[in-house]
Length: 338
Image (cartoon, rainbow, N blue to C red; front, side, top):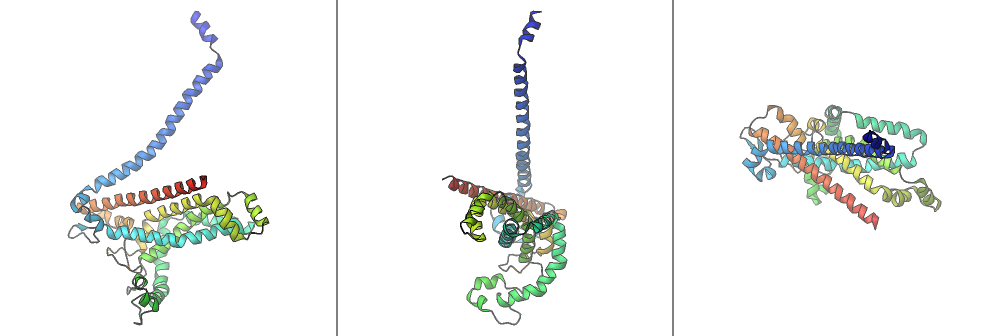
């Protein structure tokens, strides 16, 4: 009887507060579990590739990173060619995609009439949703032949050191580095440059979508104030929009870079898949993802371990790129806080 009276005396608010505190703890544990699951998945994938590539790392040592030889018949493997191909195709893609994406986002957010913004934005989102194999097939059957017939002859004639007519251009004669970059006698369209261009087309929708969204977050009163003071559209973009959104813009650029680094099928179709290091962008090459896609099905023994080691190196390269992005964003945030 006394126990029932004591229980009845407990205020309802205390019971509710105790229940809410318990629910909050359970919800916090659930959220922590989700976050730890992502971290565990990342560490598990990296650890699995490192463990699978341990034989290659132990057999070749540091030479695995510096060697350009890849010969399955002799069980000799080096990662330099696919790592170089991954980095150079991603750099070419960014070099092309960033200014184009900036122009698209700027046009849609500041210049385009309202009736045109929605269909163009929808088209960009549709391009972002196209599977990568479609881009690869388009690159192989349409773009690569066009590039071989119309673009590559012009590049080799006016920039390369191996022109068809035998006359070295002024650029190749006075800037040998440029001449080697565009010197080529290969008649096919598949090359490192072709893969970089197709990658640029693939990541433009991602970068431009992010830029457009962040440009639209700029307060309208800031832009209207600048226009009222006589600023042009370019001055408003350069002095108002970009300083306000530069951190998010850099984040979008690195998002596109992450997509380019890990792209597999599109690059596999058009890069040429030749394990040979060449200074020319018009020569066939290989990337980490394309090498794994081409050889993993038939690999065994040390070759399989070398491919797993390449997968781990792709983890490392992506991690380094993301860390650079984080450091840049943190530095920008520190400057903005001053």
